[in-house]
Image (tube, rainbow, N blue to C red; front, side, top):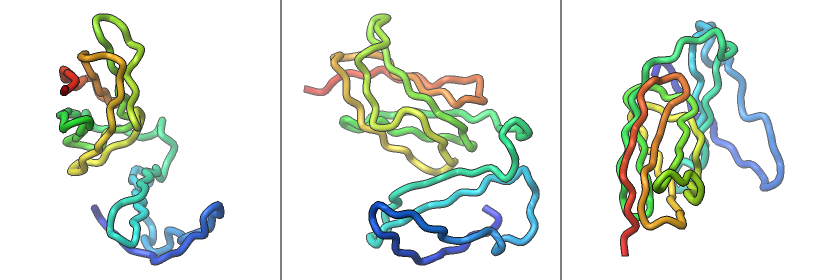
Length: 146
């Protein structure tokens, strides 16, 4: 992280508003990633957005290694580098249908843990995660707890 600033705000439900501009940063290179996080009054992150300063096809992305673990009915996803468009899929004995994730396509920052709820009609299966610009895939066996 090169620079950070905080803007207090209040947004009325059902409305949108301009929160800030990037003048706070001054000039910066176009290969930068701009990350915005909306934090609730309780300190929990409500939403995160990743925006590129240049168009995506002009950027180089690192070879991110995604790792998976399961805690109860949640899949915990982590990465060592910025992982663009992590896609989650599940399959049971060749059947790719029936796995539902609370979020199955997202950007992931290093050092953050993304917790995704798992719902499935299957008792067991294989869950795979892959970042769009990375060659490696993370694979984990899933087995429903009774």
